[in-house]
Image 1 (cartoon, rainbow, N blue to C red):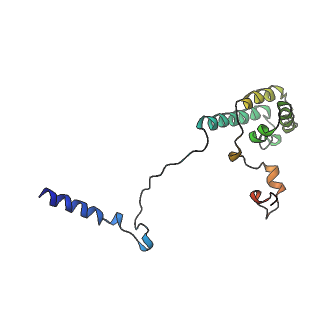
Image 2: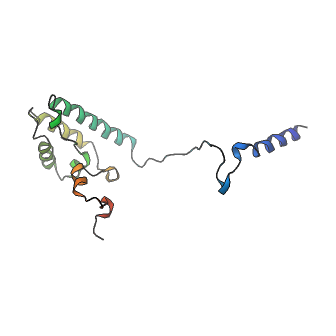
Image 3: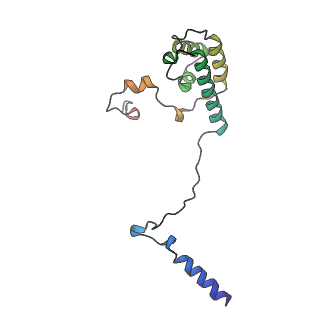
Length: 147
């Protein structure tokens, strides 16, 4: 008897509406799908980058208090990391902060120290707003390289 009950239970599960297939073999009802996401980048490195970005945003708000319209749109960490040395990075940062009326030297020095702990991650790099504007409406950044 127990075998018959077990057989009926298995049979009823196989014929349940949640397992029924619609046309084309797709599931007829909503089905919860379990999937694993593979992360290509180190979680600690991403957290460090996020912390630096938050720090930059907070410090820029302090430096440009009352003059938010003059604040740079973005300080691109990847662009800074791609530069050869700290002198170039310092010049780039100071160039972004030319409209700031407050002293920026401490910010620049602190940012350079924070950048030393980060690494280039080419897969995360997004074009800066100036690069996006330089592309024509039909150009795709992935297709602008010569063949």
